[in-house]
Amino acid sequence: MIFLGAFALSMLSVLALTPALRSLATRLRFLDHPNRIKVHTNPTPLMGGIAVALASMASAAAALALIEYPYSARIVGFMSGGLIVVILGLADDANGMRPSVKLMGQAAAASVMLLSGGVQGLPLHPVLGFCLALVWMVGLMNAFNFLDNMDGITSGLAAIATFGIFTLALGHGQMLTAIAAISVAGGALGFLRYNFNPASIFLGDAGSLFLGYVVGGLSLRAVSYAGAEPTALLIPVLMLGYPVFDATLVTVSRLAEGRDVAMGGKDHSSHRMARLGLSARQTAASIYLISASLTGVAVYLSLFQRERLEILALATLAVTGGLLLLGHRLFRVPTTEPAGSRVVRPTEEEIELLAAAAVESGGAAETDDEAAERHSRETIEVR
Image (cartoon, rainbow, N blue to C red; front, side, top):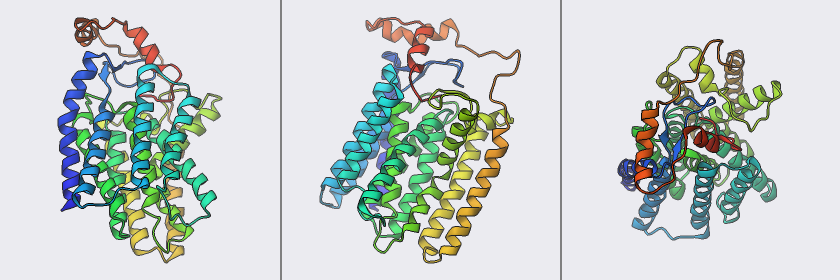
């Protein structure tokens, strides 16, 4: 019952908080403005990530208090790291941020969690374990940030991943990890009510970085059980194969074109799927299906086949081969606008309506072009 309560509380909290934060973001003009490298066509409120983070952490804390689970440096460190990435993301959403500064902030948040004992028990030498865990968490924060480019994708993938982590944690007897995972699953799933196409609010960097941080940390916790072999670390990689795949596809394609990897563009796997003729909803559903399949395979292997290394090796090769074939097909999809195409921009009436609240409350007016430039400069997020 404690798990169901944490899940329901988190979901209901997000459902209640999100409309209020959406209105606040609109009044403050804390909006994601359209530009040539984004797919949405109207200024859209940010701050959705605040709702997910607050609901998830508060629900987990309430569940732990209810069962009188003793607080420790590990719990405080995990939540502190989460708050750091939320603040980091809000700063990036508001003013933009150099990729190097953003990377250092992500590394600092992950280090707070790791140094407080967040993933004790990894089947590796402590120094090597720390280094690999740091790379994994920072990588996933950026992978989830990269995937936050089309309605519902990042929150949906986070819900799928945390359901998988919850199942693993239960199977390996990890109460703390299970409560944290199911709380995040409830928050991410509840947010889809407002974020699935057509989205009325976005996660923003605050939300995508938070979800990447949580999924990265909890996925390692889920395989840090007594008697785990180093091969157990393949389980999180299989489970989160899609975010890793998308980040790899984008990195390889930009390097092949001689472009800066940190610069935005419509070259993610979701953009390429849409160019093949899928709608935004069909694209999200396709990515959900792939991710759910990978998660199911990873959970099955960890709970029922972890002693049979040949099965794990064959599954890893099969998944890798499948993703390579998908990547080869998507890599051939053009990512530039066809000749004669145009970027759809919001009308003046739409911009004026969204700006009205801020003007009435004394906020400084800002043109659409100025805001679009401000939100897109020196940032690795693309929408």
